[in-house]
Image 1 (spheres, helix red, strand yellow):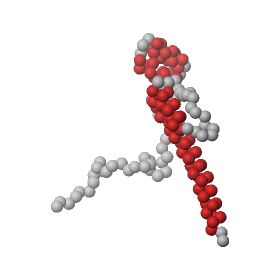
Image 2 (tube, one colour):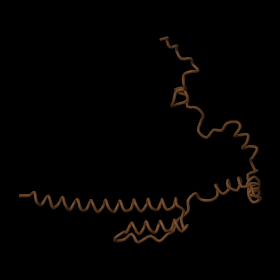
Image 3 (cartoon, rainbow, N blue to C red):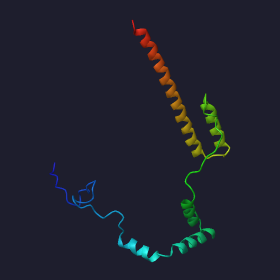
Image 4 (cartoon, one colour):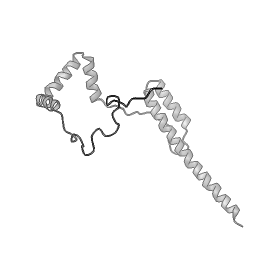
Length: 150
């Protein structure tokens, strides 16, 4: 077997963690490099015209520009409205899940929205189940305490 040679400086991977030496905090937060400052200076006062140009391109059929603008303008999520069974008294999770399923199948809501609603119903029913079990357990413990006393 041959001896292993010491690692060359180029062979050693850069250490993980702080990229600067102790005491060197690096650039101040919010500071910009020279290129960013130059670009901002060149565009100063041109924002309105640039937005109007972007809108004109999108209206003219530039699909990439249309996607870009809509991605910035439209909300990421929408409010979903479906009539679930009432939550007072006995909550029937099966009926709620069936309502969500039917809304998704009919195209009233998206499958991702149905999944989010189903997750909410599941969490709600777990909370109800946990509350009921806690009450039953406390009642059993009280009965057992009454039996232990002589």
